[in-house]
Length: 578
Image 1 (cartoon, helix red, strand yellow):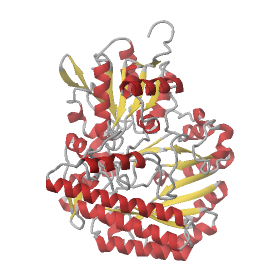
Image 2 (image 1 turned 180 degrees about the vertical axis):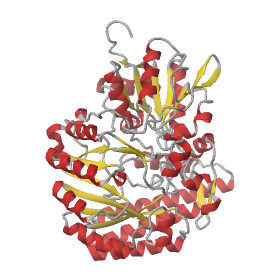
Image 3 (image 1 turned 135 degrees about the vertical axis):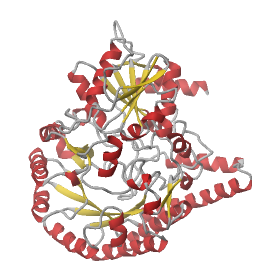
Image 4 (image 1 turned 45 degrees about the vertical axis):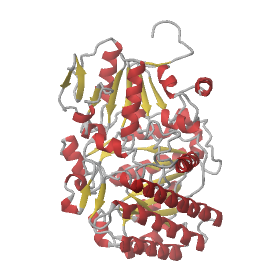
């Protein structure tokens, strides 16, 4: 990277590349990217185009050491530009190191494949993987030919900074850098998992200023950013790979909650400037924050004029915090009892309040000025059978009737595609009524390209088989959407669109399963239908909260690195090649 910049390439010291969940998803006609196979709980597709927010911290930390990091969201680019020549893009990335994420395992297929493409195009580049899932599967991950380095740990700022510094200087001997598994002279070497910061998690300030001028593609919604004040967890939900148990076992630490400097979080909020007035915040993991830090956060939100904040809460928020939330901005609380049934709720890691107590609290929260409460229920928990899921939907109708819908909006989603490796339920399945189908990283990678999404699931329970999990999820969502239509919570056309999509999806899944039973092959006309369905379902993003088709673009994680002219050239090149 000497001399004048080459307009035909992008240059950096480190590229962080976010892959699609399935590398070659475009034009697939042998698997269905089915509605609900991504739970439809957030505004992304089953390509999982949202990259880890921790990448901002890596970018900032390296900038503080005079090195440039660029984030390239290949998943988002492939969705927005279906004709994009992906390998042509990778060939234009000029850096000594390229990093990839597994992001809760959703990218386990695409990331390894994209790294392999990167190595084919530039054998000298150093490919690096990191994150919780990469830490869990480090010994297996490093064996892939496309992987040069695995960085273990929940906070890798120091190791990755030193690795890029040395790689930039031409070194490939990283023996003095902690937390690494890396290849050198044909051997896999380990430097020991010793870097485990106990305070100031991701000690860098995420800079949102790049997002100030961005306009969402959907004019009905405001911009959305995220804050992440800590890592690990104070709670111990059995299904979660970021729980107290999982951190103790995967990360080898006793202290399982490490907080970020509060001053850095405030600086992150301040980086949006005047655009804060048109921006919402998703306050991740605030359920592990103490009252003092939470109240200081709310003061900053009010002072900086943010449009609204969505708070994740595990317990019933106390009255003084509710009142402060109500005064700070338009505040929404996302509550997750997981089930209306106390036995199931406790087994899932909640169960600290009854539904009667929750309803009394909802009334108080609304009186305190909370703008709305979203009550999330989960499918795939211990003791939960088909009847229990139906009873949860009946309870949802009760909530809608009592609170008129939007004030306390019930939602339900299946746990897909995986039960988290490292979680208590994954590690000790029989004790909790689970059966695990995929144990290794490669088994999970192959599962991601299974034709039918219930076969992608790495688990089933004693009470619900994988196929039943799929079927009861469609039954539950269809019934809940119908109820919301009947009570005027959702417009009729929204409900009709969701129900039509569910019916079409179930028909296609049934035809695919029948064909697989007959001879394991899909006839040409069915392949045409699968391809057309995938094109249509991956042409927009949506979520259960407001099930409307949203065009891509304008989300904080959509790519802002690759110039429009380069995208145009690469799309035309791919088109000419065809």
